[in-house]
Length: 227
Image (cartoon, rainbow, N blue to C red; front, side, top):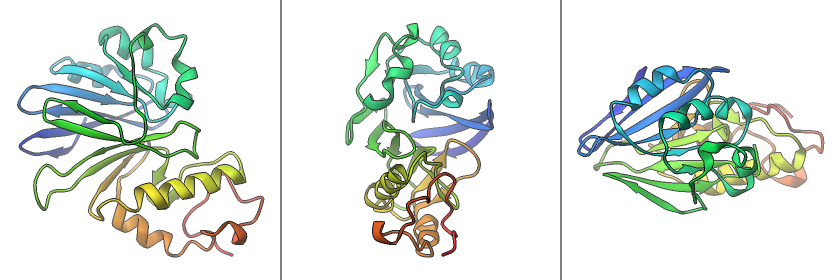
């Protein structure tokens, strides 16, 4: 377990498991109510920690197998509402733990104790990819953004087509890079970054405009991709 943040209102802890996946637990300090973000394989350590809290919901950033491999184990222990973008929900519809869906439409606000999360639809990596924004709990504190596989240090998440690359870049430009610059982005794999750092990196990306982008450019694309 790694503690990402601990303030007066909430704390954020993370675990690495499965396909080098990050899962997160957000816990309200006052009520002990908590939210789980993503359910990768081998979630036992995360489950053990979550058992010390009052889990209220499970939020899934997108429907790729490595982010839901541990879904059955987590929902068997915690019978709580589950949120996933509507366009990704098909992957969970046959799972018994998805019997109580939670709407996570764009700009939906979710409240659990002192935890207030805003859902941000960011299609591109998948059709239903959704990020979850936790605002700063006090002036000069950092907001936190759970980005799944939409945004990483160094670039966007992997895309399956040129159209999907256009979509994810638009999601990042219009919905993530417009967030406060000190927002800490917590991705589904690897290290964190900040919106300020991501914006600075993206300034070097030569393919922001569709007319400048090669039709065969997609997959793993980095901000430092050369012309």
